[in-house]
Image (cartoon, rainbow, N blue to C red; front, side, top):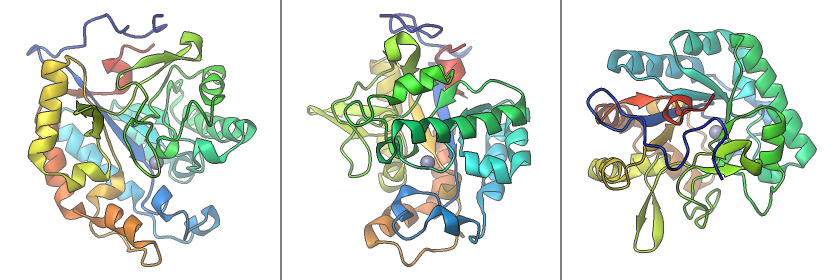
Length: 296
Ligand SMILES: [Zn+2]
C-alpha cells in the first residue's frame, strides 16, 4: 500500500545540501492553560479570564527559528487562531506551515464522531480563511487518536480534506500513547492520508519517548542527541520533534490548584528549555512535516 501524494516507505528521505537527512520540527500553538494536564481544574469557559502568553511566546519561537534558518509546522489551536488572527498570519508569512490542532483542545477519545468532525472543521475553516491556503495536516490534542476507541477519526480527517495526521506518540503514558502502534509513517483511511508518529527509540523491546514533550525537558541532553543520531544514522529516517510555546516561558502564571503530577510535568526545567532547544536546532536541518514527507 503506498501513500497517495506522499513520500512512500521505500523512497529515500529528503536530504539537505550537506547530505544530512532533513528532520521535521513541529510546534503545537496553544497556551499554558489549554493543556490536558490542567483540564481537571480549568474549563474552556475559564480560558478567557486567563492571562494569555501564547502570542509573545510564539513570536520568540519565530525569532529563534529565523535566526537559525529553521522552518516548521505550527499546529494551531482554533481557539487561539480566533483570538489572535495576526499571529497566524505572521507564522504563515515567515514561511512556516500552518496545520490544525482542533478548536477546543478536546481529546478525540472524549468526543463522538460528530463532535470531533465539528471541532476539527471549525478550526480548519478559521485557519484556511486567515492564510488563504489549504490546511493539510492535523494533530489530535494529547495524541489521542486511537484505532480501538476512535476508529472513525482518520476517515473524518480524510473526508475534511486533510492529507496527513501526526497524532500518535507510540509510548507508554497515562494520557497518550499506543505502545503497539507503528513507529514510522503509515497509510490510514485506505491510503487517503498518512499518519506520521512522533519519534521514539526502540530499545529492549520497548519504545522510549525521544521526540518531545516533558521527556525532552526531563531527560539529559546527550539522550536527545543520541536519539537524533540513531534515527538519522542507523534507521535512516527523519526525526519528528514537537514542543509548545509555553515550554520556553518560565515566567508563566502557576496553576497551584492542579494535581502535583501535572505540575511536576508542566513546570520542570522550563528555564533550560530554550537553551536545549537551540542545541537541538543546531544538530541539523529542520523543515515542516509537509516538506519532509513530500505531502501535496
Ligand atoms: Zn495540544
